[in-house]
Amino acid sequence: MFEDLNEIYLAHVFVNIAKRQIKIISEDGYEDTVTWKFDAEGAEGFADTTTAMIESLDKEMLTVY
Image (cartoon, rainbow, N blue to C red; front, side):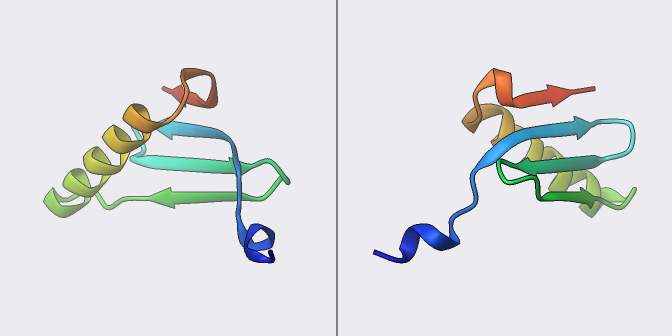
């Protein structure tokens, strides 16, 4: 019954390729930005995360620039 109280629903995700940065905005206005390092590990993590976002989110919820 109370499980739904802790769920966060995404409103939009912005992917900034040049900065290796993803900004997530929830339906209730919460924003969080994650930035990956400019090294091999950061490149791999950013690529994996970006690919997962593109494959799983509706296109209207995603902006890639």
